[in-house]
Amino acid sequence: MQAQPMDTAAWFLDNITPTNTVESNELAVWDVYFRTFAIDSFALSAADSAKLFNIAYQSGSEGGIGVYMARIMLNLDVDLGESNKTDEEYLTEEETEGIKSFILFPNPAKDEVSIMFQGYEEGENILIELFDITGRKNISKQVYLSGNILTINTAHLEKGIYLYRIDTGSGDSGKGKLIIAR
Image (cartoon, rainbow, N blue to C red; front, side, top):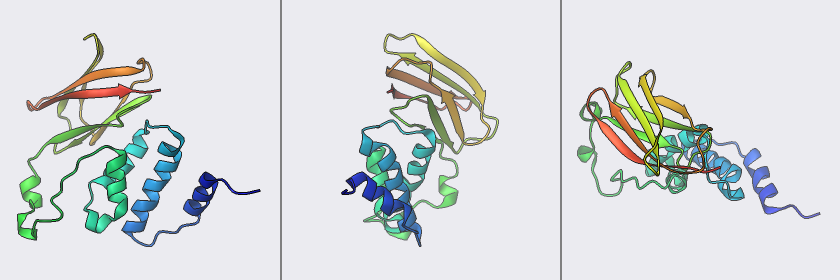
């Protein structure tokens, strides 16, 4: 009996021992790919999304092909300026310290969605609102940030397109689209 291509790929993944960051990244991305995209399941779990985000925001020269694969899977257009900048042109850690951002993932989502906050203080007041396409508010959650990732249960939501708004106690806000796919 001839092995199926997916069985062969899974065997290779199980028998690879990564020896460096490049190989670890590629192995991690292939693992997520074969459990999701390869079987036409495009909604990533929060753990898989976090794993891919951590890889996607690495430098391609240090993280290898897995960095670009993760960016494609997350549909990210990440410009780290890797090709043309000198060391002096990158922001230092002190220069990025005051920059605040957040990202909502996975998107599309199934039963939960996570929001990763960067640059926010522990205990900061956060308001998260989710509206369906008709404008009806489905989720309104006031929380105090503890850690940098907040997970919200979306299992009760119908499949479809939703709009989210995130307001912070420091006056920052953001909005966007979230797709719930089952």
